Length: 292
Image 1 (cartoon, rainbow, N blue to C red):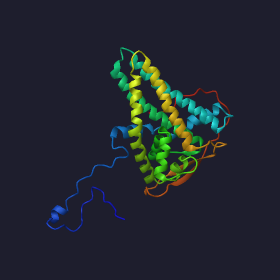
Image 2: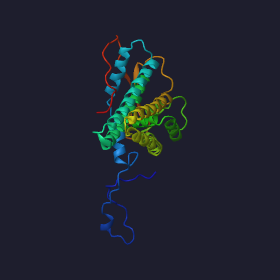
Image 3: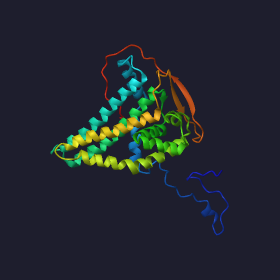
Image 4: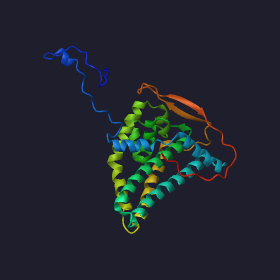
């Protein structure tokens, strides 16, 4: 197998005919960096920021929800997470339309708010998928794996088909096999396919919603909230497809994939004990966890 040298390596091969040794010894011109997934720095930065919410915040949110509902099953906790998530994205979508409808705000401010809300949508969607993973006993620390989970759930049924086309058929939910067992090289290939499809298919939906939120006379608030909730339901369906049926009981451990320097090798699976939830609490729910 050929090994590609880094772009900063100095050529040491035998000079080609007509080439002096001094010319052959000159450093090779640097190649442009390989894009992480899209090749669009702004999009890549937005997606990476969306999945940057700390795991401790996700664990704490799920634990707090369990303490407030001490007799709830894993399925019931996931239903509560779905309600919280849909409320968060629909409220954010409606707020942008309402702000843009205020004459003093203007359409320009509304466009800026819409861009911010799209980032909020991806961040909330990432937090939701990670919270569902937590209930299923899966911890996700690696940025590439988080990105694959978020993108596939955002795309719903289409995301599941894309994952299947890249890694082959997976019986039941695909999330555990992808997040825990697959090499990083496979994860990055899946991310590339998911992001390209997202930009091609989903961008139009987000663009249409953006125009709806900027509609005058307050109509944008209704379109924004309704449209964002519809997108949120796609994410909920995508998470259900990704993880399959909820477990009967809360797992006592969290399963985590630890990747070594060889991205083509299968990751090491690490089990960490889960903190026991004891006693009920009346502490109020905090806002939906988002990247800071």
